[in-house]
Length: 330
Image 1 (cartoon, one colour):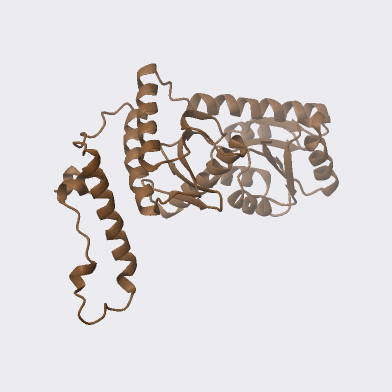
Image 2 (cartoon, rainbow, N blue to C red):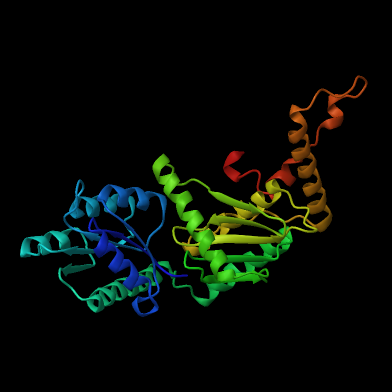
């Protein structure tokens, strides 16, 4: 997927020239958008994920330095290039203090611009790869694989994937669907990035965000495994009787286990596994309990039918084994 570039330039002819140069195959075939002010750029950056900002220094209203400063708080991972016709040692020093990745003084050639953009985005990819690669050794990778295989079997998933926002799968179990998996994982990564931004706005850094896509052919779930990786589950819609609550339960438990493995922390104390019959009975009881909860808002049962007939009970051991209870809950 092409990187997204935003150009903040109040001179429309300059903006059009830069957009055209960078969107052509010779210029990198990037997805480029432009706006005429710092205020517009800030609004776009809050709404859409961009990989690179190219901003002019002098613009009406908010200038380039002000825009760059605000970007540090709302999009700290955004790469930035400053262009200006008023170059000076002071401006270069100020740009360096703001963490600008490249500085171009007008007039500059299209070739120099394209080179600066390519260098900046290539450096971003290298930094992202270093930051996102947890440096897994064979033992940890095998543990992750085993846990994901179990999750895949537990919920009858078509595939379970641990991936980053670039669409690269670190560990995978099962097989994907009949679609572009790379594009799918990138889209899921961007969706979860928006969810993370929402958690930051609300001040809930430890929130559990779960994205559900319920289509006619596939049902997918994505949750964050750690700061850089996501866990995505793909189920076939046809013939899948899983309920959201059941999938959420298993996915939440898997996220906890994977998070411990990725951070090299000892996993939580293992719950004594149930045998096959106990497992089926516990799931059936949980399903009945969920159905009872769904029916709670329905009219009272007809006269002669006891309300107890509508209750479903799970034993303590079953609830504990399904992850509904933790040790500290007791």
